[in-house]
Image (cartoon, rainbow, N blue to C red):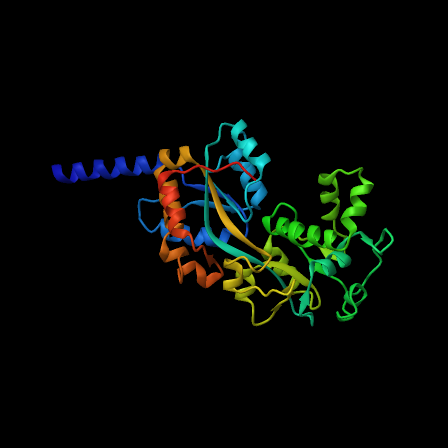
Length: 342
């Protein structure tokens, strides 16, 4: 038998065995980040020797929980998030000996109030008056009885109130709770009444501010922006909270409602002048960065100018470039950890 052929066959078998023993990257979290993560995986796995990552869109909170709880199986290498990690989640990571964590802000996204109805602009106060179970009528808290937008503000059309929201496990919903409902609660004076109701407990008052009325006033399909969009397609007068990427892909059939006098554009989202803008993150442990080369290579792929830079491939699908992308790359290369001040 040809010796060279035998050596080649042994080498091929060894490589195949080694490849079989490897496990693919496991990535889970934000449904907003999910499509960008998949596109980055397509590039990452172009090399024949690289296993295609397993990517799961389950929401920011669930993704971070999976990363920070080593008892959850299978463990993941990277968590995707459309909001910043919370202090209590950092504590959970520390208690599970996951860390120090690296935070990678690879781009920005805007949350858009998309609709096919004739509603051009809304404020946080108007949205709060439409969606909160209890509202301030000037003398105190009363049960919300409005059914149409015109009842919350005479300048709005007589269209039934219906807002489609992602469920509470998604970063998109947390942005809505904080920048729409809490802001509207404070601006309408309801916060002070709620604060007195709970004996000055600001945390509890804040929680009460973010409660919303049930159907038909709010609809909460299980899932993130994609689920909200699917529900919107069947409702001609509803407003859906979706990612900028989904809005951009469907801007011919829906309009973006101006929020607090600001419109969602590439510039307003990246410079923060649009109130419903947020960074998009990847979270991983510094240990996995050094111990599992595929983790580092994947993050470098998504941080490349070709994907996330100005006019990068991901920007054609709604990603807004991070103007500090070069610094993010440098920090990741140097393994700078995540600060814990909030």
